[in-house]
Length: 68
Image 1 (spheres, rainbow, N blue to C red):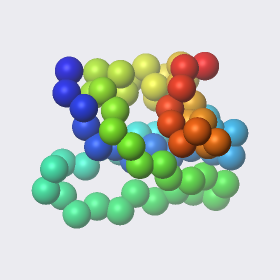
Image 2 (tube, rainbow, N blue to C red):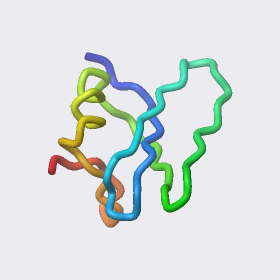
Image 3 (cartoon, rainbow, N blue to C red):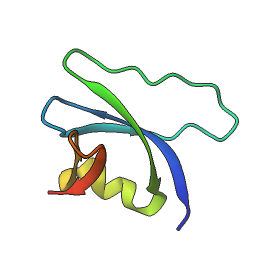
């Protein structure tokens, strides 16, 4: 499947809260809640559902998404 640009909202421990995938020409800003941050990266589109389900987290030190 294709890679897509995504904004990942996560908490301080790297737990993924949500993933936003704006369309290519959209001008969008991803907001986060209290205690959350946004990490932007490219992801395999077909992996997004399992990432949101809890099988992955954001590794803040390495600035990447990793399996739990």
